[in-house]
Length: 430
Image (tube, rainbow, N blue to C red; front, side, top):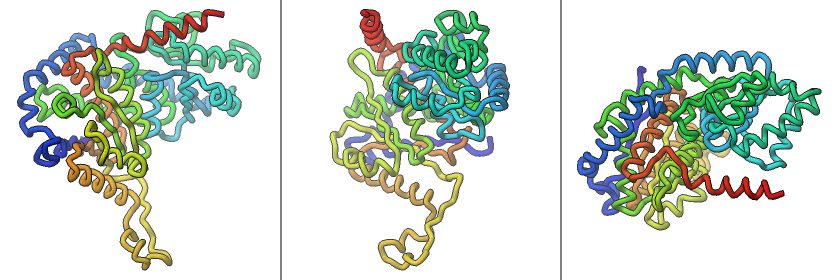
């Protein structure tokens, strides 16, 4: 790769920039043994095949199968509806929002709101619509409920229950669960969620790849970014591994400085869904045993006008993680027109909108730094498949490493199950 797709800039987390609220410049060295242990614990399991999520870029066979299926779908359908929720939806949505191309229109209803879901179905040509039911377990309540409604709608509008079979793709466990049984019974095309890959780590499995490919995302570029990131993740040295450095710094700011809240703030609208994807990854992986960091999402410059006051003068419990984009696809300079000589306008005339957005980010970062508020920056040269693939893999590794530092298992979610059990009991009490 000719240019680095991503840079990690943590300078404004240190005490020489933000004073007593920041970390000692030697904090990563002091944390060294813990970082080494956290890195080794994850990569030993990756090497054994127990945790394949950091090596998915090596799975060319799955990528080629996904691309082949997506090409076939593009020749037959206009729309794809993803029936999934949480990790079965957020990753694909993030890839498409940032990188979507000239493929199918992809919809992520992502909930059981009957008004929204019904309006979506009403507006679709069901003959020209494909459905992708995604559930790692094969029995997620929301996904199965959506699927049963769609099956009835297809029967009513297309003439038979069988009409859905040629328009449905299933992504689920390779061996068990309702969706796998349905796929076998009806001969449905299907993809597998690899064992050992949880939903929030599944964006680079067919869970995220198939919807993205159908939308026209350049997955070859995404895989190049993943490979670039994987080279850096192999190192146990935080000076060479940005995920390990970031995990150590964010953990230290929580443990030493009482800053458990991390606000992820991309200065690009196309990355809004990426920040939302990260929020699930961070919260569900680390919020356990009465502790854990708290993710917040925002978008610059929009949320300078809603959240910045809190960041600047609110409780000293937050770290702001910016994503800055050096170059946008479009150039939109501010024209002089007939108002360019007004002193309230003249200073911005001639600047490109993207440049203004970058300066707003830099101004916000500098203001936070001067106020003693720790902040870091992830810098992308542009929103490209390579940069997004690199960032998403690095933040997955960062989350896994942080689990070791916090002393929790980042790959389970025991707190989620109780609500599911109660909901099923309530629904069964007819």
